[in-house]
Image (cartoon, rainbow over all chains, first blue to last red; front, side):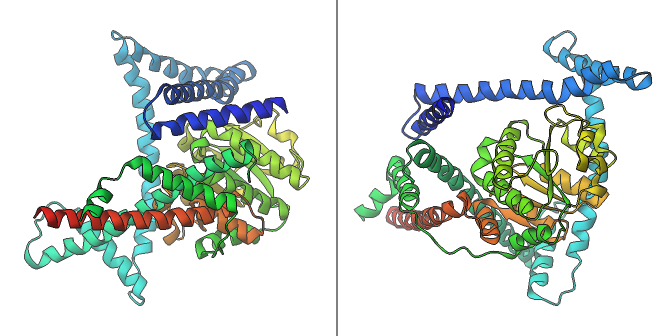
Length: 203
Length: 273
């Protein structure tokens, strides 16, 4: 119970310290900011050790036998090689694990993007022009793609296509901005709710 | 003219104060507005509602404390819905710093519905490298999660013995503050046919709508509004519902600020010309 109260007071104090930046930069804000970065980093290190390195590498190396055991040395060595980036002389060795990671990422990315994004999205855009929504969607997709087609200069009448595309792009930016405002206000509401409810018990 | 000049040069601290009051006053006065449920949220709700008791839902915590106010109410609402319908829950996550938030919600809602760990729900924790992980679970979940987050073998829990890959998981609920949702769609959805819906922060939600339009996902809960709508559907008021009146007041205020700012800008520009 005491720990809970103490935790609430610390959280409230840190929230106010962060909010104090709205007035101007000050030592309380800096303290809270640095504390957050430090705690997050420490937390991350513990998680990587507890949920990745220990169960997936150390524990498995002890419990597995034969090839299953020795193959674990491959990711372990690649991981250690990544640390050579800290030394100027041997930093080039880190390109090996990076190449490995990039290779996997590219392989997964290409298949995933084609199978999971490009084809389903194309399929979803090839719509019968029987409803207003479908017409708007198809015009939006086609004009926006043409807007980013840089091998041809759109002049005269064809310039209308770009103007239509800009309208669609602006509507998209507006929607994203509206959602972003909602998201940021939600965060403020969350903190205010915490201060008024958990800390001050007003609501 | 002086009024518009003054308005154009207003101190930002005054705007912060007005916004602060616009947040505090509706919360303290417990202002309520009706909440209209959108089709995207209703479809998400129905994807759980349709599942029979004993089905398995995987919930992925792909956010951290910075997005907690938006996504935590969604997690609580989805957990309540699952436990109400006696659906089993597997909790995982790709954001290391978000897993404790998942655990807090899981413990809170499980206690409300008298659900038992290992029997009705399980927390398998976090592993890094989400793309390879999502693909790998499609083969065998034990390759990555042979134990739960407390290092207890998952095979010691009865309902987990029948779970090997996405074939045994009826639905994924991804709570997204970043790009992990894309990976769920691209790899678990497209490759393995896993059904899913997302709860997303306001910032991430617009990026997920193309998947909804292409019917690659069942629905989207977008921002605090999405959480409030889901709470309305399950008839359980939470922080989403409590926060929406405040959200509406502040939105109205921001619209007024934008209009006044623009009028001030154009008046001053005309004066200069």
